[in-house]
Amino acid sequence: MLKETLNKDLIVALKSGDKEKTGTLRLVLSALHNLEIEKRGKTGKDVALTDEDVLDVLKRESRKRKEAIELYQKGGRADLAGKEEAELGIIKNYLPPEMSEEEVKKIIFEVVARVKPVGPSDFGRVMGEVMKVLKGKAEAGLVSKILKEALGRENG
Image (cartoon, rainbow, N blue to C red; front, side, top):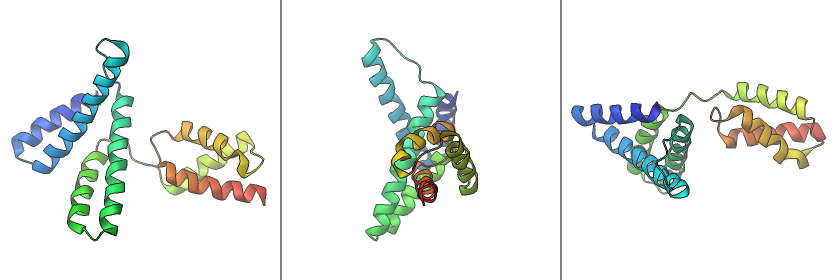
């Protein structure tokens, strides 16, 4: 299970004195603990997180780092951007590899052919179908950009 891997890697990082990895894994495990508390509150009993829950938290933490990197770079804080990039690198080790733009395009065109959208007005419906197929394998921003191009061509 992915959460167990994170815990084991935290212990290894603590023993080896890797402060960056230790800090990042503690933040991720803290976010997972918060999710467990949230789920426990809804059901009233202990709930074990699934690997999918863990992946969702990792993706959320990854997204936070990407946004922070962008903001720090705009603000001229290369030192802080570097710290966030290092954390992002650690988090990405636990995420499945993302698909290339070409692979994403291929899947989008397959879904578009299957769903047969009328034009850009069907963006939401098609995007939902594409994200079901690509769940966790590609960033929504990239998918959105490619899909808008594809639907624009469909209409023109």
